[in-house]
Image (cartoon, one colour):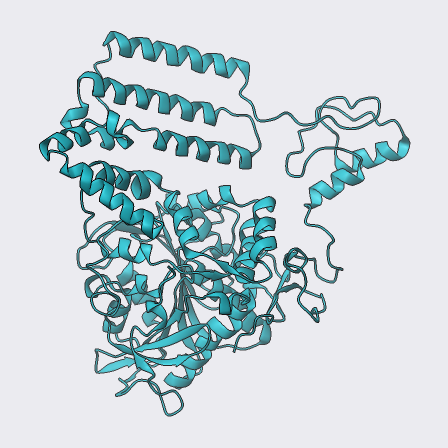
Length: 617
C-alpha cells in the first residue's frame, strides 16, 4: 500500500534520504552524481552571481559590446558569463535590464491608427456592425448598443496590439498577452445588465422574473463555490453516466481496477488498460453509450480494464509521484496481466494519465521488465517545452509557494484546479454563463461533458508539487537519466514499444505541437494522428455521427509543422484509425471470459465502483 513518505523522486546517482526532507529541498532536481543543491536558483542566475552581475535569471540582455570590468579577475568572470548589454559602469557591474516596454515609435503608430479608426467610427463612415458572436443579436446591431459594442471591439483590438508590441522576454510577453485578454473578456458590455440590451429586454418581457431567476442561479453557484455549467440534477454516475457494464476486480489505497464485460463472443488475447488523468475522473472515457471510448473498444473485441483514481482527502495527502507510478499505474498493469493471464498488455493514457503512463513505462524499461506490448498517448505531454496557456501560471515563485504550503503533505483542491482551467477559456466557460444564467435567468442545458468537467478531484500536495517542478517548470522528464523515479533513472527512449500518439488541433491545454514532441523521445515504432477540435471534444469523437475530421501522415519529420504540411485530412473520427492500429497487437483471439476477475481477484462491486462517486466538495 502507498505510504506517506514512500517514493520520493531523486536525481539519478543521489542516495535516498532516510527521512522526509523539507519540501523545497526534497523537490529540487539534482544532476546525476551531484550533491543536493542548496537553492533553486537557475543556472543562469548562479553564473550571473559568480560574475558579480545583477542580471536576473532568464532575462540576460543581448550583448552590444564587451564589459569593462575594473579588475582582471572580474573581467575574466564577466567574459565567461557573456558580455553584458552596453558599457558597464566604473565598478564593472552590468546595468539592470530594461523593464517590459513598448517603443515610442510603435506606441505612436498604434495611437495614430486608433484615433483614425475611432474618428471613422464616430462619423458613421464605416457603417460596421459588431463582428462578434456575443453581439450577434438584433438588439446589438444599431443605436447606442451597437456603438458601444463596436467601441469595445475597437478598444479590445488595440489592447491586443499593444500587448503584442511589448518588448520583453517570451515568458513575460505571454503573461502580458494572457492578462490583457482576461481584462478584455471581463470588460465586454455583454457581461453587465446596464450595457446588455438582450438582458434588459428579457427583464421587461418577463416583468422581472428573469432577474429573480438569475439571482437564484448566482446564489446557488456561490454556495457551490463555482459556476455550474449544466443542469447537474439530470446526471448521475452509474445511472446515466459511466454505465458500461463491468466489475471492480482490484483496489488499493490509490485506485480501483475495473474490468468491463465483453460484448463479443471472442476477444483479443491481450487486454487494453486505460489510464485516465488523475486531475479528473475516469468516466470522460465512458460518458454515455453513444460517446463512450470504453464501450466502443469493448465492441471491437478488446477486454478493457480501467484505472479509476481515488479522489484523495487529507488521509492520502502525503502521497508522491512515485506512489502514483508504483502503486498506481504499474500495479494496475501487473493486476491486468494476472487476470488476463498474458505476458504483456496494451495500455492507453489520456492527458496527465499519459504522462504517468510514460513515466511508468520508462521505469519498467529501466528495470528490464517488458510488460507492455503497445502504448497509446492521447493529448499527452512528455516534453513540456510547449506548455500552452497553462505555462503562464507556472514559475519558480509559484512552485516554491506550493512546495512550502502543501509539498510536505496536504491537498491541492480540485475546485481550485477547475477554476484555473475555466479561466483558460473565460468567454466559453465563465462569462458565457454569467450572461445566460445571471443576467438572463436561463437554466443551463443538460450536457454530459460539462457535468464531468465540474466533477473535480483533489490531488496530494507532494505529488502535485513534483509534477509542477519537474515537468512544467524544469522540463526534465525528457532528459535521459535526469530524474530518478521509484529508484530507477528515467529514460523515455528506453521504452521501445509501438506507440500511437494523438493530438487535438485546437487544444489549449496540450497544444498538438507539444504532443508531437513525443515522437522524438520515444524510440519505438510511432504513429502520430491529429484530430480536429479541442482537448476533450477532439478525443471524444465517436465514428457514428461522422463529425469533424483528422489528419494522418506516415512520416515523422523533426518539426510538427512539417508533419502537418505533408498530412492528409480525412472526414470523421480518428477512432477507426486507432482501432486498426491497435488490432496489430491483439495477440490473436480467444473465447470471451465468462466471469470477471480470476480465482485471486474476485469481483468487489459493480462498475463504476465507489471511488469515482466520491465528491471533492
